[in-house]
Amino acid sequence: MKTYAILNMKGGVGKTTTAINLSYLLAAEHGLNVLLIDADAQRNATRALIEAGDYPTLYEILTGSELVSYWMDATQPTDIERLDMVPASDLLWGLDADPTGKFWTVHRLKDFLAAAAEGQTYDVAVIDCPPNFGAATAAAIMASDGIIIPMLPDAYSAEGMADLTRQIEGVKSINPDVRVAGILINQVQRAGVVDDAAAYIRENAPCPVYKNVIRRTVKVIESTWAKEPVLIWSPRSAAAQDYRAWVRELVDTEVLLPADQGGAAPASGEVLQHA
Image (cartoon, rainbow, N blue to C red; front, side, top):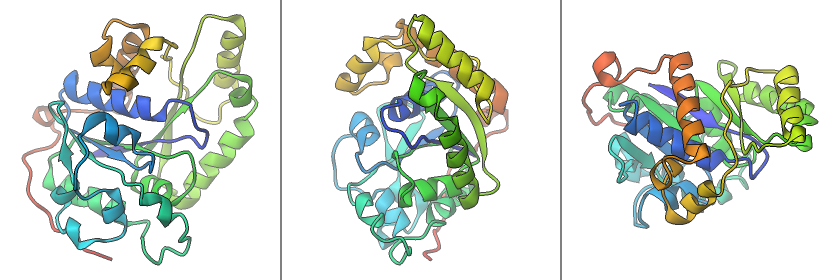
């Protein structure tokens, strides 16, 4: 099972939208069994895909709660076939006030995903990260194989390459084995200044940049109100077409395979060891 964190320390760059639509496409159009993990205390991905309820969340995983004795205890089904998720909780905010890790451990999400991998239920895990280097982000980085960075084609992003380099160095300090899978240029519109910014990002980025970009469209905003991936809400919209092309690029680049081509097999309930 491969795990990707959708990460950028800036807000408003489309992390949650990217995580939701990536997860949907991997499951619905590429036949992969996907686990989407909401690591953001704002819980936008959780609200979009599952109903409110009394269930274990990422908070219980990170704090070693006995409510998550088995990895399957913390996964919830969505209405999308092949797509499950680990919900977020607003209690995640409180973990950032505990930098010593007295009440949470950075390795617990990694251990959780290792148990899920042994259970052989999922082919891919996608983690929607918050816009900070708090507890949940550190745990996500520790658990990930690759980092996907959504980025806007604006002057702040183009001029912030030094900041991005520092972000990547910070990621490496937590997990030296993680790699940046690529930068996804997001919310592109037809304008010379946008083209210039995108070109600057491609020429100066300290990591790979995906060939495909995501165009800006109101259909993405509408899909958030509808609580659906834009691929369902408006499958022929510019953003839907772009997400589809980008995910094909990602699948080909990362060689992501479904269960019947050497991926996961049926599940078993692996016990989690509480640290």
